[in-house]
Length: 236
Image 1 (tube, one colour):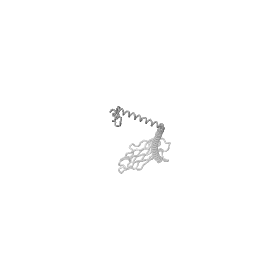
Image 2 (spheres, helix red, strand yellow):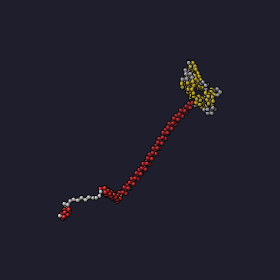
Image 3 (tube, one colour):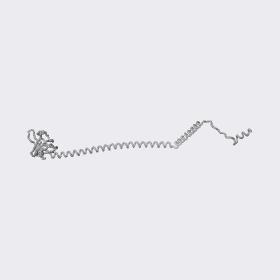
Image 4 (tube, one colour):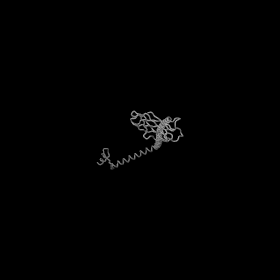
């Protein structure tokens, strides 16, 4: 009987047995993680070792260094080009401003030249002719500025360059008609003093009755002794 029990346990028909580990599950997972980490470290080491053997790491490092050098050179060239562009733009702005100023100066010079030409022509027309006295009247003009007011201007010139300074006065007199009768009127102050070294431009306003019709304007230059030295009449 005993022999049969032993034979039954050792045969194929013996009942199955389950072997259970006494390690807890956290320790099992920790051990598995350690094994996986160790395996990964070995694989990484093998990969790097293979790269070193094949020379790939040195090639990559050399390529990376070359690319860095090229990037640095390109940056320097870019900065240099930007600096040149900024300088060129500044020079262009300065040149543009200088051209505008030069154009304004040219316009001003042209205007001054025209003004000088006009003044030259004016003075040429006013130059006294030969045979006249020591004083001459030129450029006598008059116009009605307002009812009862006559505005006038003229130039008193000395003939010759060695003439002494002239001191005297000039008188203005209007002539025409008033209420159908002959009429004339001078300045209320009788005349204005004038000192002439070479020439003197004089101008002013003389009042007259608004109903008067002014037909002419007379100018006389009188010296300190009361002698008339020059005179001129303007028909209106």
